[in-house]
Image (tube, rainbow, N blue to C red; front, side, top):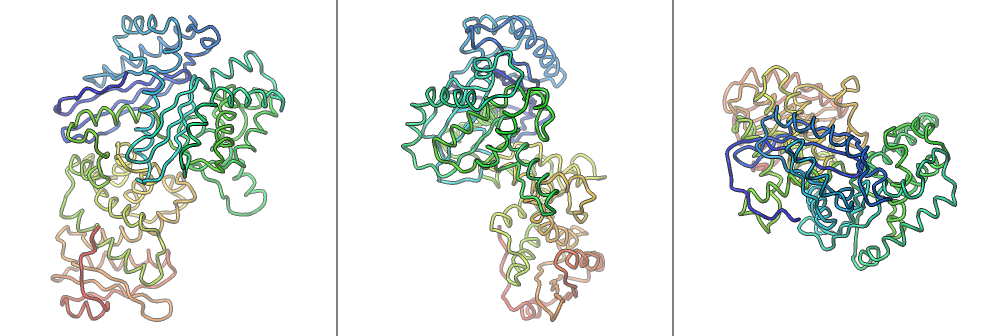
Length: 548
């Protein structure tokens, strides 16, 4: 059932979103503000295995239903604590394919008050597309979205604007484990694995043929299966790097075909209990992960992908995006909210100091750009954009408390539904907000938790944001502009145009000079002046707004 009705705009409220899958049960509690922005208040996930045994007999089993019902009672109580005005509850393959699926929905409604809708496979695919695509960089290129659930796998072709093909095939990690490995706890032989792949190819044949008609440039996998396989592959690469005495090339956001094959071989060579000990594995997935890996491997082989991007977004995110789109009728049929609009919604909800935030953003971009002209900064254009957004949001944590507000800003950015941003981009912006008051170091957990591939970006961009923040320490916008120039071997000059004497800002900037020295290995001489013509002559250019 497609949820197509419009929702009348209302005052601030909380809603609960429940995704009842064949393997996992998830609850997302979200505050929706009057302007349409959102804040995640809580997330809960339980592995209930509702589909266990049900796919063989086409009936949900009593033990699985009772187990799931017990968890749902707890989730209903959580929603009551948060005073949710509405619970949007979606059930997928385990319920829709079971003869007694509707009976279970009625039983859940009676016992918990939660009213589930069992969506079709295509509707599930549409919601997954909304959730995952809204977290990717906007692009016209076609992507294949792969979501491996417990009972089904959704295969979607689309770009950032629209989907082109929606498919749902009855291939899931729980379904296939019950079919091929029911009761087995030993290793999986090459022959058994080949038979599993042959079944997958046959079941997905028509979907594969439809997908082959599109010119697809990228594959995105968005399930817990894909995330766990990426963790295993990354843990193996980390171990290899330590043993060989070299930097690790591990990435949790990209899973290569070679990395997948290594993980599959290790998984298949071990019995169930030994599998649970594999570095990076979620022990609760150890019994169904081989089947999930076989699905992903087969899709990659059939479509010729050497790697997949791994997304942390899922059906739940899609349910929320769909809900928000129905809340805003003027957006129906149009693109999702722009990145800047999403950022400003959060900033305004947190009552940010607009003049200060935009001024710090302007100064940070001026430093970024002038560093680029000197060859100090080779970051891609998207880094400039993320620096701008992070500068707008750097102080929003004051909404919670001034003390440790950088940590509060970090939390708010990571836990708010910022539409249009990838998970990686959100991590960068959140980290920049955290480090706007201090230099990143390997002693800090927030920095260590970042993937290796974004640490250098955060380390460099945080220098520009930190200096820009120092330039408006008094929040009077007295430092009007800033540029770097070279001044001989090992030296930079930092020119600042000031409107009046500003000892507080100049002292702060001088203290910040060591950030440049530690980041770029260059000493900094501060050159303040109050005349625009002198400033322009010193930096060798006429002043223009940095812009976003």
